[in-house]
Length: 451
Image (tube, rainbow, N blue to C red):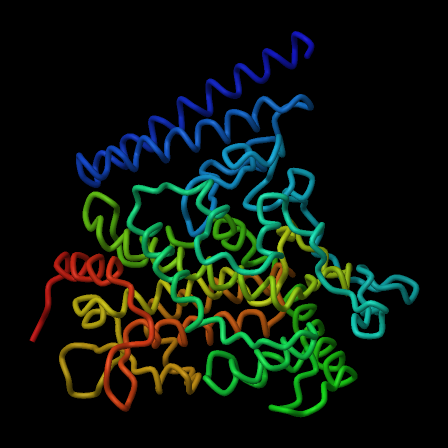
């Protein structure tokens, strides 16, 4: 190692460790002396090691605009830059995004010159005509996420390497993973395509996915033969909608989408006007939501292995990324809707920001049946409005197909129902997460309840 490299490594390591330790310590301490100190030290050290090591990369640190201040591992928990989990020295621009795929500006000029479009959008690749089909491969995953290409590990052994074991959301994620048989809806077929077909049948029947969400795959109904030509036709419709977004709204929403890329939870803090020192258990509840969402959407990404839209249509020209994990379902959509639904489980939040019933002074939480209708009036519910906005922004910047976003929303509703709603025949909800129940009770105590 030459002198310049050693100096860069030392300086970057020192700066990252100092900044991460300071931020993690102060945040954790404010959340409670015993639990908060443990969480703060763990988060700060993780952040310091990962960011410091990345800044000391031999080729020089990526510009601050390409570096993420708080690299996240599983479920909104610091980590995930590679080094803490032993995945090697990998400089990243964001979660699962190599530094080389950091932000690149594109001029919003769509003038057709001599019959040639400004961006190469005319040809869309049909993934189902390829042999084998054009799908996400194991080596396409970020190295720190390749374990998601393996059979699901209910112990979350590798996922826990870059998480803070003292945090409530980590224990909630472990409890959720332990109940995987009740949310994966998996089959036992030996043939990979037949197994996924059966799994889709179960997900649609259980209302964890809509039929429209899986038309791109060629799903034509339970027990029906797969219709790949119809699947590609649906893909073309989706990409055309994304190209319209590119022309009409990407420039207007780019700064917002870029800010939401590393983590969308701060936008919910802003919406509710809260910080960790004001309502720490509400913040923990949101972290629990993102942890559960992360386990679920990564599992399903590994099952559907859908390539990103820009793979099929490079002319979408995403300004950064895409992240190195599959497209379906959208992680941002799943997590944002999960956060919104969990927040609306807090009575005081639902009374302030829920559904308006004419003639009643306080609002209420929407029912599962109402959520599944897709009624656009539900976007008047601020947390649901924000979740939808986050999801749409990922489409606007070319990272997700519309069906990725819709699937994330539907999955979040299904998970919320399985955790909180008892079956119509009576008994307990399908998923028992005792740690989440305690977090929800403590979050509820932070908000006034009205009559």
